[in-house]
Amino acid sequence: MKIEKTILIEDLVKVLPKAVTFLRTKNIRCLACGEPTWGTLEDAAKKKGFSDEEIDAVVDELNKLAETNGG
Image 1 (tube, rainbow, N blue to C red):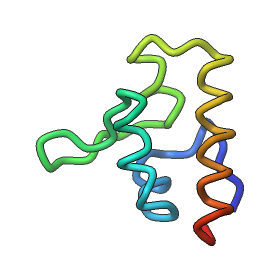
Image 2 (image 1 turned 120 degrees about the vertical axis):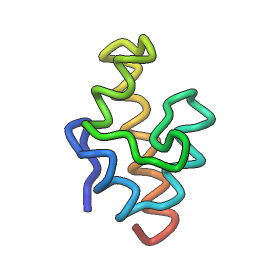
Image 3 (image 1 turned 30 degrees about the vertical axis):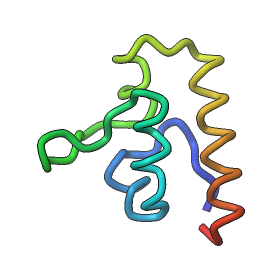
Image 4 (image 1 turned 45 degrees about the vertical axis):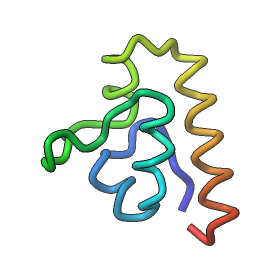
């Protein structure tokens, strides 16, 4: 599955559980107080001030992570 910036956080975590740790390193929370953060990856990144180019770079990194982990 190719990850895109429009993927819902809940779907991203289902297909690539390691995304939680990866996004935390980018200061993008996808889990808060044990409750999932709803919305898209793009929404979550924009809330943290990421530019469109930075979001594209995160998506590229997530796709590489998925490839190396059989995602």
